[in-house]
Structures are given as structure tokens and as C-alpha cells.
Length: 432
Image (tube, rainbow, N blue to C red; front, side):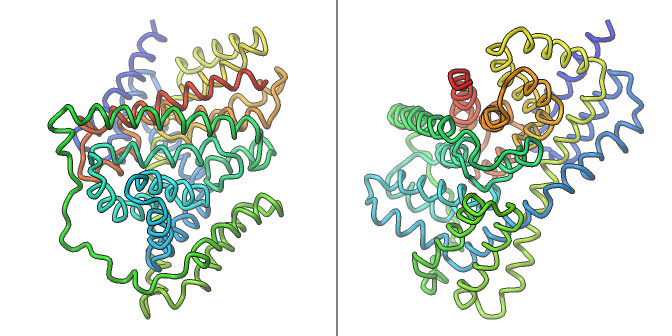
């Protein structure tokens, strides 16, 4: 009976969080209300749940990844303020032509994501580039989030060598490197882009038959113009910091925190004269600050997971999952996908799910015969599934930025960011 009540309480808390975000409530205080629901229905000490378990994510997860998040955000801000991101985008799109402009746009997003620029910051860089492209190609604006998310998820979760925190976290827990399971990761990436490309093409064709979809246009902002891009760096200078970071971390085995730091330093040197005079310090300040809020938004949902982990209901679920995974190596492989997505659902965050999943289950999986490299790539890929719940902080951010809502734009996100990664991750069974 206690298990049933506790499980119902956990589900109720997550349902509340979903509804709250749909209604526009902040994830910051909505998460606290969710913790209260979980604590009361699972007979936890409310004060301890809030001040110890919930807040522990700030002192553990946030402390471990604070510098990485802020370095990525600084990198993104320097690329934005100097016009380097715009230069990369314009060059690629000009080369692609109008017919393939959307493909070029996705290529830019993939390059920036693979290079380690914060996912949250990439949205701010891509938004001004996307508006004229979508308008010129008559691509329905309600698809902007999904089209933007596809080239983010591939390099972020599947492609070996990426500089995002999702690919970095397992290296600290498993002792692997960023190129873990290169063949499997490459196959995942290719299949993911192919499947999502077919879905996007199908959805865009279908959109022409629905009036509101066909007439979905980019929001108009009269303050937007391309002034400031005349002094943008050259294409070569624009790509050097990203390439340097990738090579130093993956080829020279430099720690990610140093690799990203050197990329930031290269940006300062190469882009100094391309940033408005006297604005370098304020650009760095704003960039660093841009990394703080996304980190806080991730840590609060990780905090919910920390509270759930203290409940008897979760202990029962965890025990059952471990029992199932121990029945065979194949069962263990399937359980990796299932367990990672349960944690992703609880966290509403891929990076939070990766950290908690590996900390709780990796030893048992390694003991079952799975290699750390395989676990690394599988968990990172699978984490892109149920993390994309409606209250995921990135989903809320990208819809808000595009002046869109869940009702019109969430389903495309659901297919490319929730369903597709889970299906791709299941293919990992063939690589054990």
C-alpha cells in the first residue's frame, strides 16, 4: 500500500510539473512544489527533503559542472557578439542556396553544437539567422524548434568526440574518453539524421494542407537588423577556436575544462577587434552569466530526482530493474535504455539523467560484462528520450524564444527528440 501511494505521489508530482510548465509557471518554484508532493506521499521528512536532498544537487552536480557550463556560454557569447557565428551561418547558407538553405542552417547548428557551445546559447545565436531563412524558404515557423533540435541532439548525444557536457560527464564516472564507442556512435548519428530528415520532409509536406501550419510565420521584431556583422571575422578565423578545442581534447587528451578554456582564449584573441570597442569585458561577463541560469534550471530538476531516489518506491523500482538486467547480457543492454529513460523522465534533463544513472547503475552493468565505452555511448544516446518532457527547461526556452507554444510545436519536438533517440539507442544491442 505504501509503495502504491508513494508511486502515485511521484507520478502526480511529475504530472503537476508538466501542467505547470504548460501554464507558464517557472520551473524553479514548480520543482519545489513537486518535491513537497513527493515528500508528503512518500513519508519523507519534508524539511530534510527540501534543504538536504533537493539542495544537494546544487552542491554536487552544479559544483562539478559549473565551469564547463559557463565556459560553453562564454564561447557562445563571444561567437555571437563578434559576428563569428553569423559568418559561419551566412557562408554555409550562401553555399547551399535557397533550395537547401534549411539543410545549411542545420549544418551550422551541428557545427556549433559539436564544438561545445552551450545548447542554451546556440538558440540565441541561431534565432536571428533562422528567421530570414524560414521566411525566404516559406518553411512553417512552428517547425523551427524541431528543425533546430535535430542537429543539436545528434552531435550532443550520439556523435563521438563532441564537447558538450553530456559527452563529458561519463568520462568522469567511467574513465572513458570523448571518442567512446566510435563506430556505434557514428552509426547512431547517421541513422538519426536520416530518420529525422524523412520525418521533417513528411511533416513539411503535410503542413501545406493545414491552414494554420501553412501560415505559421516567424515573429517580427523591428529592432533586428544585420548591423554589426559588417565587421565579422573571416570564415577561417571563425572556425579556428572550435576546431582547436575539438582537436586538443580528442587528439591531445586535454581535459575538457582546459580545452574549452583555450577555445575561449582563442576567441578573445581572434575576435577582439571584431567586438564593439569597449564591450569585451561586458561580453565576457554576460557570457559567463549566461551559463549560470541554464545550470540552475538543470540542477533543480536533478534535485527532484535526488528526492525521488530517497523514497522506498524508488528502491523497489531500482531493485526490480537490477533484477531484470541481471538475467542476461542482452537483457542488461535493454535495461540500460529503460533505466536511463526512467531517470531522464524523473530529471527532465539528459545531463542530469546521465550523471544519476551512471552513479547508481554503472558498476552493476560493468559486472554484467558490458564495456564502459559501450555504456558511455548508450546512456548518453538514450538520455535524449524522456528528458524531452514538456517541462524540460530547453523545451520551455526554445518555445518561448520563438514565440510559440506547446499546443502547436511540441508534437514535432516529441517525435525527433523523444521517440527517435529511444529507437536509435535500442540499436545498441547489436553492438554489445
